[in-house]
Image 1: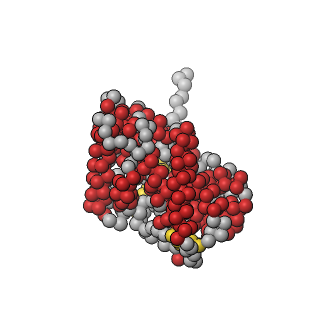
Image 2: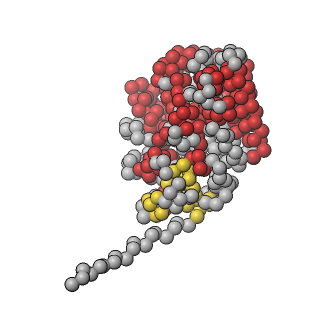
Image 3: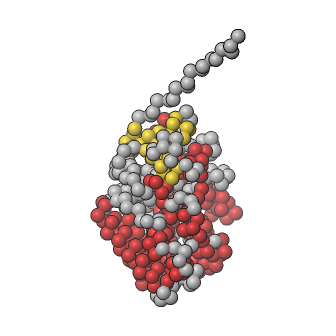
Length: 416
């Protein structure tokens, strides 16, 4: 008797979630973005449409999914660089050879060219110089007297000085580069203003790389500053000139993030006396507190850069089809209650080491070691030197940047 074949019915795929418009609305201080909170509640995978670009994209919000997607070569940054994926930024024209849009093995080749500038030993070498620059800024602020704008006097010029030291930007050129980078990360000026700023910044970097390639235009930081390393890599034929410029630009722009991150941190500390007292009276608690604050602060508006699925991927019973655009939210992952219980509460005793505030996978932030160093110096120096540091206005009167991709206070009036 022939064996009977039993065919089981295929399990139907889950219906696609609706496409949700994600407006870039105004946000209050350090509040968690309400649209993102809704999307997190709706499921691990949702579909979003942002103000610019075309079509829709998947959004992953759970910690495990975010880590998987950012480590999985089936999700390509390079593929996303040639498409007008739905996005927050008004202007989109990735440069050839940009590190942020590279997949392996190109990503490692490009990153290797500047890796010597971002090692732990490089941070140790720069730390005394960074402390010296910070002390000078605090000295000037104290001399001019209370009250003062902590952003303008310390939290903005300090990271600019540090990133320019790392990059090798001469002193008399630093303000110009800062003005360009500020325009690039803003969404208020529109596509034309952002494009003009990019042309200025990348044109300046191109001239600097060519000068270092030819052994000219002395550096501010020495032979291991980023521009010198890139100039040498071009001279050896390891990178093309356009690739070197595309690597350097985002590294210079990324230095702006410390101003906004530290601004949010000090706003939180100064508006919550219990947190401030804990860090002032317990210096040993500060390193862990920095990690918890990095986990908690809403670093950016909306989401960062997309990826494209290069083949079908099933996740939570939903098929992400080859060619689909995919975003991950590091902010949402840092509020995943499965990893961080009671995630909307700042808990300075929490082990927040699993946070992904600096990204994850091959595109983990190149400058993370320098960012941590700067934040540690800012907290230690300001709390030790200004024990009476406090807000000079009510917390709800501190203005925050609006219509920008990177969030933070516009000014931070303080007294001491």
